Image (tube, rainbow, N blue to C red; front, side, top):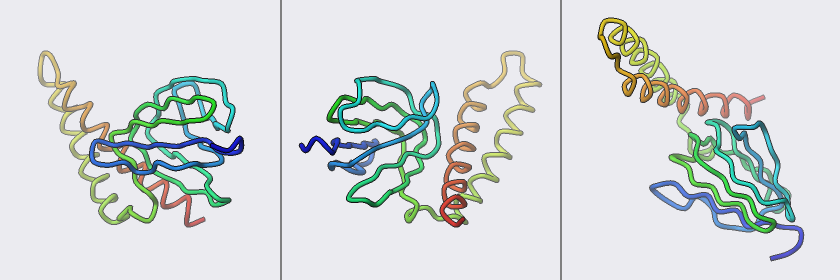
Length: 146
C-alpha cells in the first residue's frame, strides 16, 4: 500500500460495499466528525447515522450509513454498518415514503407507551432507527443536489 493511501473496507450484513485503497475517509463518530488519512493514529468509534465519505483517485463518493463502527489504523479503515448506500442507489421517493411511515410508527409507539405501564421501548427504538435511516437518505440526496 502506498504511503498516500489507506485501505477502506465497508461491510454490511448483505455485502462488501467497497474494499479498495483511498486517499481519505470521513464520517461522524460519537465524538464528532473525523477525517482519516494514511498514517492516522489508531482508533475505534461508533458511527452516527449519516454521511460517510471517501476520496479515491481524486473523486469524492458519499454514502448514507445507518450507524455502525469504524476502526482506523495507519493503513486501514474498516467499517461495519447495518446499511451503507451510495447516493446513486437511493430512491428518494421510496425514502420519503419510508420517512412518513417511520414518523407515523413512532407516533403510534409513543402513544402506546404512554398507555402501557412498561412502555414499548423496542417499538420506539425500531421506529426511531427507521426514521433516522430515511432522513439520512433524503439529506444525502438534498446535499448532492445543491
